[in-house]
Image 1 (cartoon, rainbow, N blue to C red):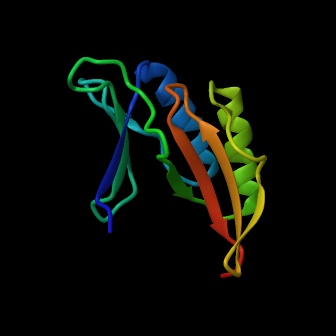
Image 2: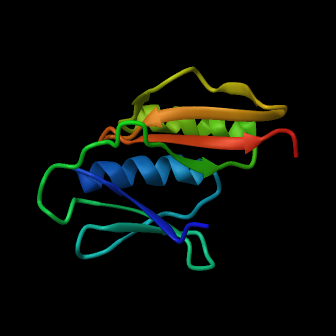
Length: 128
């Protein structure tokens, strides 16, 4: 359904450190930082995640009610993702990592705020 997701970042170096650390816990490769400062994480098949300073020159701000969630292979990977995020400039957000029941589906889920305040999550479907 989606081709790409881009989040705003105020400090692209801090964001790269954060996302390289957290996404490696989920099995994703290190991001490629372009000359523009934009950093891309390629997940193949034309799908990618990126962050950049806003093109209009204004400070990046989080979207109230917005969340970007990354697929994770296991609850253990999510716990590592969460710990790495806290160690590299992220902050706690919502409930601690754990199992949630979504209409009969059991999901292991954790939330963080990245260094720019964007709300992100990692999710593993335990029902599959």
